[in-house]
Length: 128
Figure 1 (tube, one colour):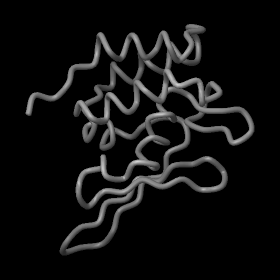
Figure 2 (cartoon, rainbow, N blue to C red; figure 1 turned 135 degrees about the vertical axis):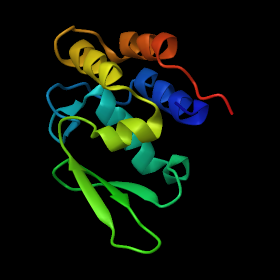
Figure 3 (cartoon, one colour; figure 1 turned 90 degrees about the vertical axis):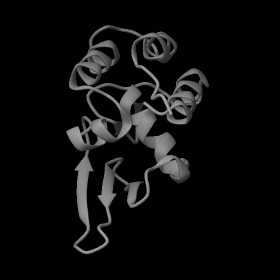
Figure 4 (spheres, rainbow, N blue to C red; figure 1 turned 120 degrees about the vertical axis):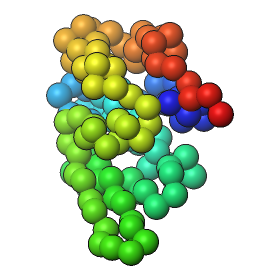
């Protein structure tokens, strides 16, 4: 994972600004899961996104990952409960990372501070 994305995500998780929920990336009435916090950070900081890729959120709390191809159509992927493989790949998360994070958030009773500590230890930063 790129250091700037990881650091922004960790800062957000530790900020106390996000209410924690489970089962969805973002429930507009209840809060975010830890992966939803990552999505929200990337919506608010589009400069962290790779060129040609954007992330947005609708009024229902669903995130849309969009790819603009130079010589082709735009592809959109709507996310509500987890990150699709293409987003995990973009940001250096494995399927196992995602499974662990979902378990910690939804079933493990871990708060965002504990989840941030795990991310800091377990998710490697990309070497430039």
